[in-house]
Amino acid sequence: MVDLALVGRACKVLLLAGLVGYLLLRGVIPAVTAITDDFPEYFTSAKAVRDGQDAVKLYDGAWFREQTRHYEVGSQENPGEFTPYPPPTALLLMPLTGFNPLTALRIVTAFNVVCLICSMFLLSRIFAWRLIDSALFILLSGRALHSGLRFGHPYILISTFCLLGYYFYRKRMPWLVGLCLGVFAPIKYFPVIVLAGFALHRQWRVLLGGGIAIAAVASVSIGVLGWKVHQIFLLDVLLNHLTGHLIPGPRFTAVFQSFDTLYERLFILDPARNPHPWLSAPLAATVAIVSTKGVLVLAAAAALIHLARVRHVRAIEPTIGILAVLVLLIAPGSGTYAFVLLWLPVALLIDYFLSEPARVPAYLVLSTYALIGFIPYGHTFPFEGHGGLTVLAFPRLFLLLAMFVVCICAVAFPRPSSQRPAPLAGAA
Image (cartoon, rainbow, N blue to C red; front, side):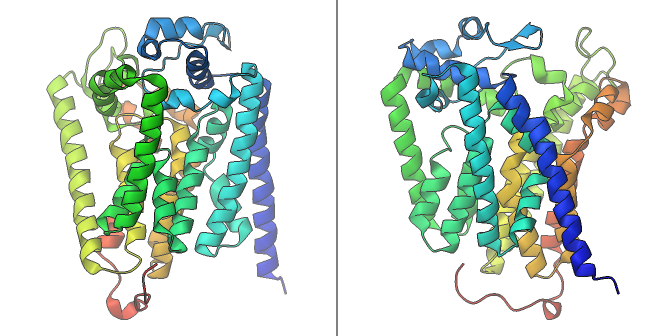
C-alpha cells in the first residue's frame, strides 16, 4: 500500500524547495546584485540625517529627488520621494550609512532573511505547527515576500516583531507584547491595528507597553530631527496619506489595488491618464468609495462586537485577523510588499477556525492568502483602463475582499454550540 503520510511529506518538501528557489531567484539574488525601487528612499533619508542636512528638506520633493538622482532604476533615474514616510523612517538605516548603497542593501537583505527564518520558528512555537508547515506558510506569501526583499523594505522585520509580540502574549508577558508592537508603529502604522485588537479585549498592559514604545521612538525622532519636520508631517502629509491624496500620480493605477483607484478608474475621466472610464461620473466614484468602505467597516464592527460579547478566551485571534484584513482592504493604496504583514493575522484566523472547528473557512482563508501571494499581474494589468473590464485588473483587491467576507460570515454564523468544543479554560 502507498503510505499517504510519506507522500504528503514528500510533496511538502518539494513545494518548500520550489518556494525557496523562487524566493532566491526573484528576491534575494536581485537584491544583492543591483539597487531597484524604494531602497534609495530609505537610504538617502538616513544619509541626509547623518550628514547634518535640515530634516525639513526630506519633504521637499525636488530636493529629495536631486539627492537620489544617481540611483539608477533600469534606464531611468529613481523618481522616489520621502513624502509618504513618517519622520522616524529616516533613522532606520542610519547605522548603515557608512557603507556604499549596494553593500547597505545586501546587509538589509541578509537581515531580512534572518527575520524570515525567525518568523518560521515563531509561528511554529506559537501555534504548535510543524516547522515545515510554518515555513510553507511564510513562503506562500510569494510576491509580497520577494518584493519586500528586493526593494529593501522593513515590512518583514515589522511582521517578525508582530509575531514576537504575540509569542510573548502566549507567554503572559504583556509589557513585552506592547513594546514589540509599539516600536515600529511610528514608522509603519500597521502594528497599531494589532494593538487595537488587544485594546478591544481590554489587554491594558499590552496597550500601555505599546504606548511607551511609541512615545520613546517619537521622542528620539524629535530629539534627532527636530519638531518642525514632525509638524510638517502631521499637518501636511499624514491626512493626505491616509485619504490617498498624497500625490496625484497613483490615482489611476491598479498597482495599489484599492477601492479608491478602482472606482476612480471606472468613473473619473482624465484625458491624459484615464481616457476610457466605464462611465464619466465623478460623484459616483465618491459615493461608491464611501459606501463600500462604510459597509465594510459596519460589517467588521458587528463581527467585533459579537466577538467581544462572546468573551471566548480565543476571541482576540479573529479580532486581530479581521481588523488587519479590514485595514488593508479599505486603505487608499498599498504595495504588494506590505502583505507580509498578514503573517500573524492570517495565521491567527486559520488557527482559530480550525479550533472551532470550522475547517472550510480556515482553508478558504489559507487559499486566498496563497493566491494573493502568486497573482499573475502580467495577465491582469492589461485590462486596466478599458472601461468595465478594469475590474479584472484588481485581483488582489477582490481576493482580499473574499477573505474578509469568509471571516465575517464564519464569525457571524458559527457552527452550533453542540458541534463545537468547549472554550479553553483560562486566559491565553
